[in-house]
Image (tube, rainbow, N blue to C red; front, side):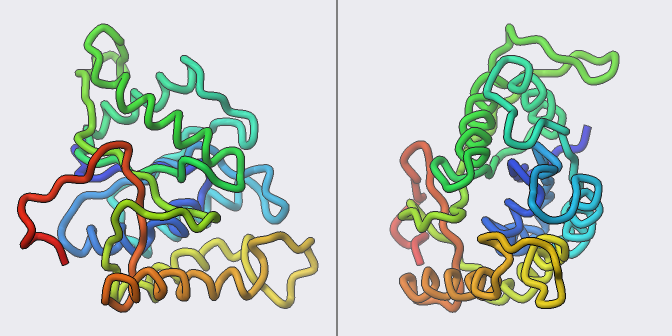
Length: 239
């Protein structure tokens, strides 16, 4: 078992890079142990394949410097928030015992994002129940409930409950996103166009972060929503 500070879930490989790649990079730079769990291989994506997405995801993980990245192999587009899938996520939460979990947007364009968001949120709660028994290999796992569950913002421009200053980390975030070379803008590609293959979409990585940064007086920022009130130690801790 490797104890992590932060465990980040995404319904598809590339969700976490796009949604909170800057935050991951910043936390890693601060010495935090961060892990990524992809629920599916994104095998229904118009371009590339599930196998290629795994390779791309591992390349992106190296750029971000995360401690671990796993894929749970759920069915892209068709996984559900049921006992079987909840238990698989619970086992992962108990395996890494994160203090903070980041996961998909609660409501978004892709149906897997909302499903993945609720699945991970439910599993975070259930993981803290002692009467739910899980094991890793031959060893029974201890109950574990993360202290915080936050949702990163994705396609829809949802109003964040709080934002993280990621100034200085956008170039590395963009590099991590572009590690998925089969998915995004490539003027030489002969594969079908999708909403995420335009140059404007890649440009949006920077201008969306720049706009959030403008609103809080920094260069770049990423937004999150929270399931409960966000508490601060005192007013001086705000920026």
